Structure formats: structure tokens, C-alpha cells
Image 1: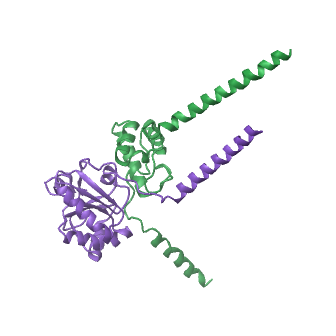
Image 2: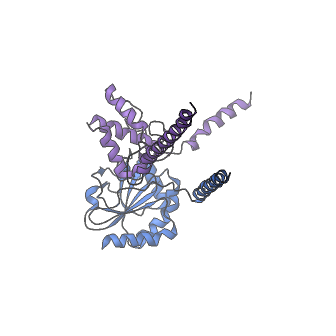
Image 3: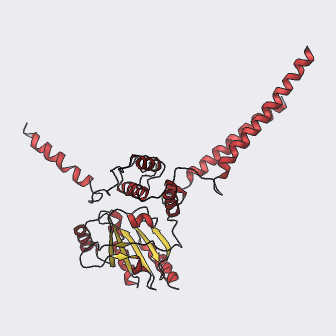
Length: 178
Length: 143
């Protein structure tokens, strides 16, 4: 009788532990971001045609000239990209050089986007089949990478850049320049 | 009857804003099979075990997201260029982590998943053996 009672209390304890575990896990925020595993790795070899008339395209060689840069992965059809446009301008005004890759985009759409939301970029490469995006482990638009002067990826920001992210990104860019 | 043209106009108008994804055609090998049936079979098997990054509970074989199409293009062109399915999976895992693969691997964080069932089976086996030998003895004594 005593053994049975202890066994039953054991069961109660076990189920309480399980429910506690479920409650804890359910209360944790879900992380839907897939982070790139390429942080600390050099940029892959690529050479993208210009995404829009009047601005050069983007190749690996442009990213390894000793100067750290931001690489913005965007698209004219991406709504959050519109929201981050003013903050990219703030970054540029604070001395950041920003190059970009336009994902699955037509030149006329990119041109219209830049005309409305501004152009903080010095180079824009067109990635028509998400080739370079896949090669750097980016899983969506917009994303922003910090690339150091040797062409090595040092930081990834997933999602649109908001005002509160600007200081951290500038700090990461400064670290990449050291 | 007078409402018909208006209905048709409405039906034509609706798809436009819904299609606001991107305007480019899919990558060449997103929806086209490889010419070699054996390679296409390998591609299909691999695509069923690679996770779509946009629609995270689908494989890239099941998803119509443009990015999944671009991943299928990578899989097919890389296979056609002579890479093995394992090399392509490794290439993706190097970029996105284990997340991108539906095929479980034994790693520092996943080994308990493989070890615990074996341990449980061993414990169950020991318990069953203990019960069987205990039950047999009183019967022998009764005879």
C-alpha cells in the first residue's frame, strides 16, 4: 500500500514537471530567424550585373579593397525594405558605404523604388535567381551584412533596420574596420 | 446580366495586388526537370529533405515560394555539374546550419535523441527479464 502510494505521488510529480516544462517552452518567444552560418567566412565568388542603369554592379573583388562596407540585400517588391530606407540613409550619412544586392528584380522596378525611397547605395548587383543570397546564407529580404576590408562577413542583421538598430550597426562596422 | 461585366472586371482586378511578390520568371531549373532521369530522381530525393527557408514547414520540393524555386535550381544545376547530393546538402548546411536539412545528424546537441531510445530499450529489457524469472520460480515451487 505504501509503495503504491509513493508510486502514484511519483506520477503526479512527473506530470507536474512535464506540464511545467511545456508551460515554460510555450512562454518562450519563437525565433523564426534563420541565421547565416557564414559569419567569419569570406564572401563567395560572384559577379553580378548592374541592377539599375547608372550604377555599377557588384562583384567579390569590389568587397576586398581594404574598406569595410555594409551589404544590403533588398528588393523593390519587399515592403519592409521601404520602411528601412530612411535608416539606410542615416547610416550612409554617418559614413557607412553601402552596397546592395537586388533579389529577383527588374531594372525598371529597382529604378522606380530608388526614385521614391532614395538611393543610399554606391553599387547595386542584380541577383535574379537568389544565387548570391543562398551563397551567403541569407534567408530573406531585407538583410544587412557587415563586410570587412578583406571581404569577410563579420555581422548579419536580419529584417528591416529600425532607428534603434543604427548605433549597433555603426559599431559593428567600426569593429570591422579595426 | 448587367452586373456581369462588373464582376469580370472585379475578378481581373483582384489577382494584381495579390501577385505583388516579384516580377521575374522562375529560375530555369525551378520547375523543369533534369534531362537525365537518374539525376532527376536524385534531385527529387534531395529536395524532399531540404527545408524551405521562407515557408519553414515545407520542403523545397513542396513549396511554391520563389526562393524555394531558386534552391531547386541550385540543387539541379549542381547535380548536373557532377556534385553528389551529400555535397549539396553540406554546402547548404555550411550556410544555414542544420536548420536547412530535414535529415537528422548526430551532433553534440542531438546525440541524446539517438542514445535515449537505446537506453530505454535496454532498461525495458532488463525489467522484463527480471519479471519473467521471478514468475517462473514460484510455478516451479508449486509443482
